[in-house]
Length: 306
Image 1 (cartoon, rainbow, N blue to C red):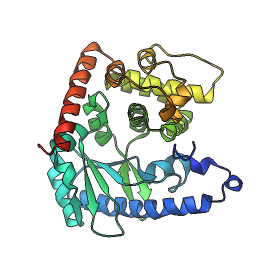
Image 2: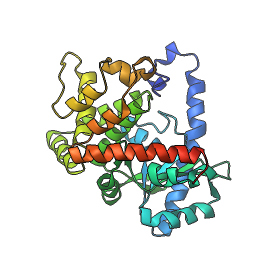
Image 3: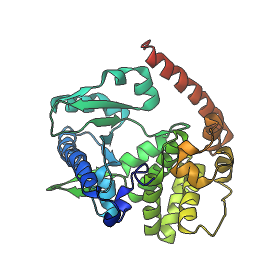
């Protein structure tokens, strides 16, 4: 289960004879990821393109003091939609090539990202994001907020931009929900949220609540906080009023089964869950329309229509 949830490094080395091989596998991916981040950040900054690296080994180093705590299979970088063409040009100059599948409307519009493969062995695949995508659709306020509020973290002999702690918490809450709806084990997102939560003082926690409400992520963030509290204080079985609709929509399965071993949980009514994650009725209606459009665009992409 720890391996499925990308948490194998929590094992006692004495219990895993293959832990050294596991660490070496992480190193083989994360070392190129860090080099890619450093070189790409320099090139984007030289071109005057605001950017932020989301997820990545930079996050695990901040939370756990270890760039190699969890494997990264690609580098996720966020730019504005207006800067997408310029960012693609920078990546082309660094010998990255756009994945043909990502040229489709589904990837450009509904996924809000495109994958670029490196021609050099010392680089890692880059996911170029122009928006942060909530399961209910785009999260434009979160996207703008992450770019505007970015902070710098040290890497090598320089610094690269990452989300500030409040935006990182909201982003992790979104990723937790996305994992649930994709039937992916969500343990790594939950642990990240827990470490972030333990760093918050009362004022910081209140600020995240205000920020989540302003960005339409109140229910999503409340659900994430409930999951964190269930991990930290399992004897307290409470569900906040804001998280209630989403918890109800997820069905009657045990929360831990749903989070850590979703393949053993019952089926989800995705549209209902997506609607329940929205703070307002108008958002729920837009989310259902978004879900229908996403499915149609996905089918069109598979049929190579556009």
